[in-house]
Image (cartoon, rainbow, N blue to C red):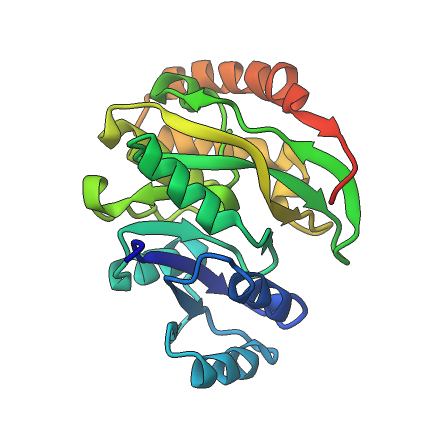
Length: 259
């Protein structure tokens, strides 16, 4: 039997997108998965929509926060409940291409890989192609990954059997960066990138990540609070981040025609 993949999806007022997201999981050619959804006190119809799916599918599970904790704690809550050999993440507004899990699990098994990630397309808020492809680097060492976040969280997967369960610190943004840093460091091997685009990232106009200047303060918190670097060391790595982000990572975003 193929190994079980646990898919982690935090929810907060996601009624506009969650049906598309869940359907992209249901359409996977790889069928041995479980989906753990965590509702973070949504005030729209998200909860009702998801409850209908969990009534119909025995491999979908819904957890409910009693107060609004944020994405990091919600993801961690799901991770601790996960049963899979592999853990993958898909936010409630993003999408997977139908062979994403099958291709990635096979890749990880063939390459004895602890952490993997893929290229992905960008779409706008309404799901229209932005004709931009974010290319995955072939591999990421811990030191390289310290300089900026190269892993699209919706594409990442790690091996629980070799690494154990790895959770996120409670930061408002960029907690996924710290999770993947922890996974790569614990592995002792570079994370491996898959050049094939296997997901669609939805660019939201009101998101923090859409404003690179505003995001800088959260990147600083990764170094200072998340990694415990001194103020001086955090500033040093912020300089490396700016160089890496704007002069190297930016070149990985290329024009394309989405299929």
